[in-house]
Image (tube, rainbow, N blue to C red; front, side, top):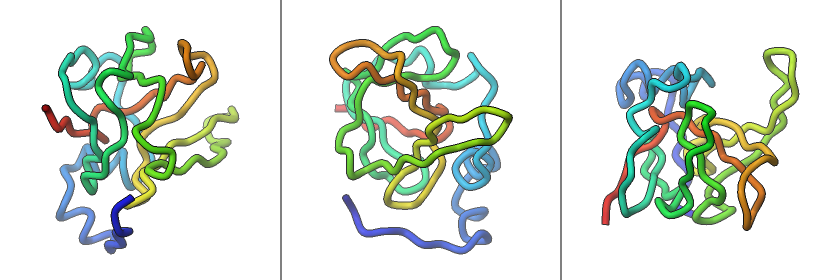
Amino acid sequence: MMDKINLTDAEWKQKLTPEEYNVLRKKGTERAFTGDLLDKKTDGTYVCAGCGQELFAANTKFESGSGWPSFYDVVNNENVELETDQSHGMTRTEVMCSRCGGHLGHVFNDGPAPTGLRYCINSVSLNVKEK
C-alpha cells in the first residue's frame, strides 16, 4: 500500500472530473451499462482514479451481467477497505480505496470461483495501467 492521501474537498474537486468526484468522494454511482470500462478487455492492472493505487488485475475481470465492471479478486487485500453500507434500504458491503478513501463500488458473495466474490465497481473510479 502507498502512503495515505488526505486532500480537502476543494482539492479533490480540482483534481477529479465532476463524474469522478461524484462517485469517489460523494459515493455516487454511474448508470448501469454506461461505463467506459464495462466491456474493456486489456492486459494490465486497474488502479484507483483518485490516487493510482493498484486494485484489480485484468485477469480477474469477468462479465457478470450487472452493468458494471466486475472482478472476482483484488490485487492485495490491504489496498481496499470494506464497510457496511445501509443506504437505499438495503445492506451491502462498500468497497473503498485504502489509500485515498475513494468509493469504488460494492462486493457481493455471488461471484465465480475461486473466491465466490463479485466486486461490482464503477468504471469512473478506475483507470487502466496497461502492460
